[in-house]
Image 1: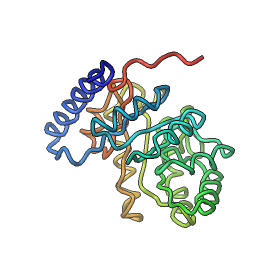
Image 2: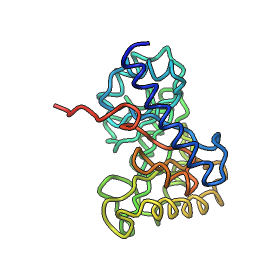
Image 3: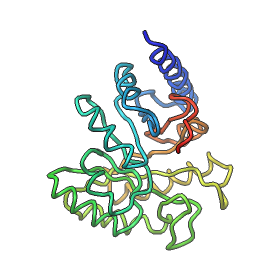
Image 4: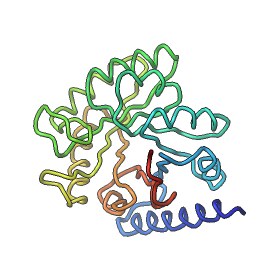
Length: 239
């Protein structure tokens, strides 16, 4: 086993233990939570090692990094998640490799994703990114739609050809009433999810929690956690 593979295996084991412990504490089955490894800034070689170690869900937040990496790993059975703020001029590229876009936060993006998915003859899973720090009708600093805009966006995705409404995503906010209160933030996301599922019962996915707060997300009921640093290490500085 190479040094890098041994390092990633040890890190994955620690993260797995954290998730399993959090599930046990919450009275949930381990199978209820899917680990997504966020591989941004790390090479395709790491993605290949992760696949060897059993990882099947990976995430990226920049198309310029993700597109070549996805191409280099096209032979692997992976589900690719796009989690970054997405500009419409990158949509055609992203729909070429992403299975799920977790950062849908405006109607214009829905329109662009639908057109690209239809053109590429693909069905694209979509999560609405909820900005818990946004005022009514606004978007948050880290992207996302205000909670009161979720239903309108859900309806747009539901009626858009080539798109599938899978659920919700959030990033614990740095400002506003939920700053520093991750568990409260994730509880609020679950409330919004419950309302969404009343009208869209298939939209069961809730993506929340990262390396520092995955336990809070699991306790609240998240179905997916997005972990980067705890698996891959402290990220290299870009440029």
